[in-house]
Length: 141
Ligand code: HEC
Image (cartoon, rainbow, N blue to C red; front, side, top):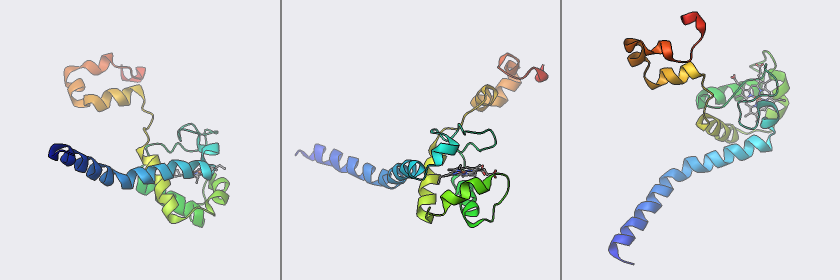
């Protein structure tokens, strides 16, 4: 192996190693999401729940997800429909909660057209008055 190639190969393995941790956690996360049947209530993509009263999870903050899952498991959160999920949480360990949360956080949240337009550069659009042309509720007219 030439020196250049060896350096390139070494560089790639370092890159793969540094990615390794989170990629492994994400792979575990999706597997656990199916193993524990989370998808049956929260949807395959974690943003199409079977009932409108059930939450969308995709793109939610990891720390928030972890806290909610722990609280539902312990019974500390006992509002709304959390009882329907509590039984599932019985067998889910803390490292598993973290892996699932990391994967859920990595998913893309569904954005409304206005949100998408706004996130591009809201300030610029307001200054130039272009927001008027964007897809938005008529109440702003
Ligand atoms: C039997 C249906 C059901 C299953 C299975 C289920 N959940 Fe839930 N989950 C719910 C419901 C309903 C709520 C909302 C509880 C409430 O009304 O407060 C919820 C809430 C949550 C929340 C809090 C969301 C928020 O915005 O506060 C998270 C996170 C969550 N579920 C993740 C999971 C994960 C991960 C799994 C699999 C380990 C799972 N759920 C399995 C029904 C379910």
